[in-house]
Image 1 (cartoon, helix red, strand yellow):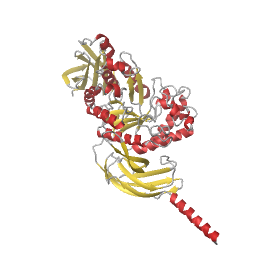
Image 2 (tube, rainbow, N blue to C red):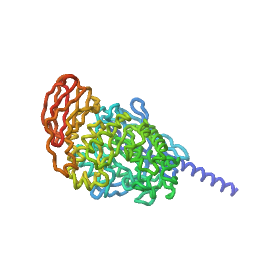
Image 3 (cartoon, helix red, strand yellow):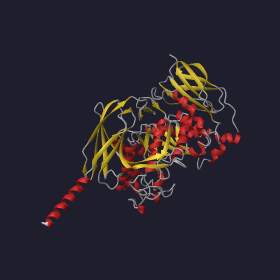
Image 4 (cartoon, helix red, strand yellow):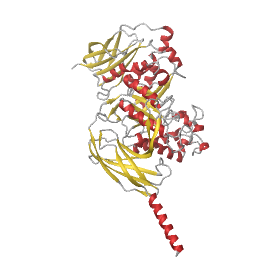
Length: 580
């Protein structure tokens, strides 16, 4: 009898343990009952479940199903996170409470929405938790989309021309550095930054014990919180981001090498015997997808994330030439994964360190725009960058952007030889006017652009951009005949509208450093073929202030415009429109 009683008690204990391990949603709290269109709707979830790693979606998977006014359904992942109190004086973080689960969602239609939650673990499935909220009108233009033209647009149809710079990582404190850089850029009409996620920056996953990292599939919560803050701060400033998810050094033993510290390295307990196994090993790819899944769950709701960049300069990884096909296959897998999991359909891209890249990668349908990185001390860098932009559009038929440019080595020659940013100014205007989806993004954000206050170069270009309806009139690069002393970049729309940028070739930072400022180029006639016959209004603009310098009326005859160019000491811009 005594043995039977012990057996019965043991059975009851086992049954209670199994029951306790089954996931249970205890409470779900919404931040608010209404949310603006394309805004952030947040659910804070208290649950009980048995799991060993809250970041592993194979271990615990919290999902939300959102149903819109017209029956559209989106399924998004939840995520585990630690909240912090941000000290806005020092930039330091202090933990608030314990870690917990949340869901974030951005509604894309006004009206009443419903949602249901479910939690899945290896021990069972929770019952659904249901609720409702209302989406109201907002000033947000929406997410950024690819178009059939070389340019991007928002959900509301307005064009988005990214104008900004790289801000790869903070040097001291993420809050203090980025709040300074982003605010100064935005105050000068910039609207875009490119941010890396490396171990020394806002990375989530790295070798256990280094700077607060927890190893594979344990995501660094202070960095994750800083990135929450940065995305929100950028949104308040009208700035969008390219988020670069991986970089070459972590998979390299030769170029900015970090492989020895990489948790994917078998020497550190990871699944990869060699750096290239990062792209080929099945377990490595699973771990990468899990990290990407967390990133989409936590940040995907943000409409000011312009795109996910899968890899920075992937051709600098070890033995790239030998494993090129595997790397293309990796990109094909990851782009398809993003298109399936990211319900907001953010753009996806990647990048190479050399323009001698692998065309097979750029032709993948999942990569929404091409990207070039170019470093050179050659004179006429504006021409080099613009020619690459034009060739990429012609070759791949996708929008293109120069994601990095600079001189070989560090910024010291520019700091001493070009303190006012002639080099930067010329490259920004040339790439925009060569048909890229936006001006090129300079490197040296922390040791050249910010210390020299080169943000002052942006307002005039921003003013020029707003004067052109890039997507509404289908602007494309056009040819213009000019004298040998000038370089002219043109964008033409419908054979009836034109935008011009005219540069004195001698006005470059190398030439000025050696010979001083050149003489103005005078008495040049610009010839523009392929225009409708009739009258045109020409507005000349100052490229430093963006202000109008004068207005001319000219006549196109035999489908050609002949335009007398004002004297050009440095550069001039113009918009040309037909007069009905």
